[in-house]
Image 1 (cartoon, rainbow, N blue to C red):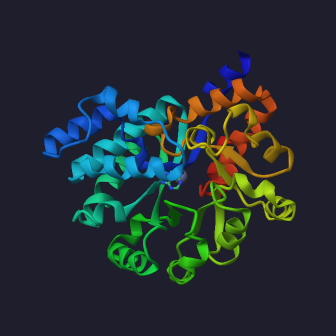
Image 2: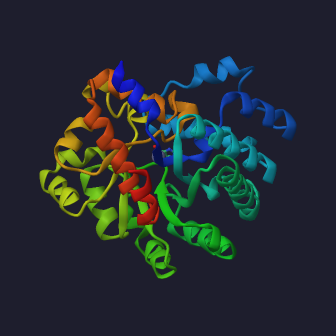
Image 3: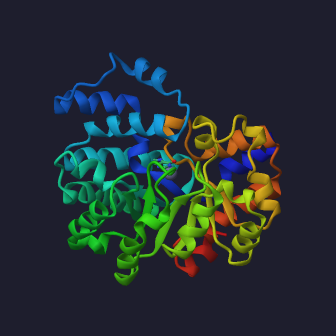
Amino acid sequence: HPVDQLILALPKTELHLHIEGTLEPEMMFELAQKNGITLPYANVEEVRAAYSFDNLQSFLDLYYAGASVLVTEEDFYDLTWAYCERAYSDHIVHTEIFFDPQTHTARGIDIGTVISGITRALQDATDKLGISSKLILCFLRHLSEADGKATLDAALPYLAQIDGVGLDSSELGHPPAKFQKLFKRCRDLGLPAVAHAGEEGPAAYITEALDLLGASRIDHGVRCTDDATLVVRLATERIPLTVCPLSNLKLCVVDDLSKHNLRNLLAAGLCAMVNSDDPAYFGGYLNANLLACRAAMDLSASEVVQLVNHSFEASWLPDADKARWR
Ligand code: HPA
Ligand code: ZN
């Protein structure tokens, strides 16, 4: 299909990518063996077979268990470098990645080990692959605000390597309001904020993320269409939504990709774009997401160009770099 050729050819950014969600089963097994960790699976096929989810929580349970194989600085380097090589083959020229320090510090891994491995790979990706990047520290919303605050304190020596903060994990029952003081502290430190909101949670969580956390970009946000006033606000204020179609499909946020509201978001004038979220778990990296949407929704060339332009617009690249790529 000609639009598929366009998808492959266009330079792109990725703005919603959890580095722990790029852990492919093969690497999970290698690292488990190397680090002497026992996985509840006999082989790679069993891991893949387990990747059938009913909702966000059923995914998160496996995702956090999988991340337990990441121990050394080299492990975080190898994980991140493998993602960067895949990003390169998808013609991603800029990526803004999330990491979940609490998933690792809760197991006794030093936050410096995590940050050093990730940033060393990102620097190599810039030097060897020409991919620029930002690193976003995500707080786990199923944990307390105090735990988040302790995590921010532990990250203070590494702030030069952190470009912003985010909020992820189990959404329902953990509204943005729970983290108001923590995000105020992040703002005072000069860190821009994003937040997962309106994935499984209600549109009201999107409004809270904007008004109570100062989020400048919303991750997922697909449930905004439940609130027409909010949609107008998102369009007027040009608040980007980092939509993740294959994730939404795998986590049963939508039951069929052809019923995804991506096209409606564009038609409503929103700055929405496509991202891969946790590609090792959801069955595809960025190009696979775009190709699946093209096929399911019959996206036009103009819609694909809009999505890719939005990915640059919503990025934290300097304006001169945005102008260079768009
Ligand atoms: N939602 C919430 N938390 C997450 C996700 C997601 O899609 N992926 C990884 N952590
Ligand atoms: Zn996510």
